[in-house]
Length: 88
Image (cartoon, rainbow, N blue to C red):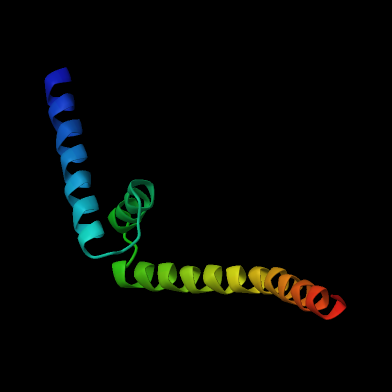
């Protein structure tokens, strides 16, 4: 029984390793944990295309937030550089 469980566990690991390599070749940007979550969701019946669309939207939203939080910092740096140049 333990031998069968070990064989099954090894098969799952090997499958995940292959999926991760395919994911990397396709430049999905998914790490092992994210890929595992996606696989589990698909196994539970989530539509893979819908899941892909959600991931893309989340990435867009995340990038948008990064740009919004970077802009005030960059503006502060630009303004302080200009002020320093004008003062001197």
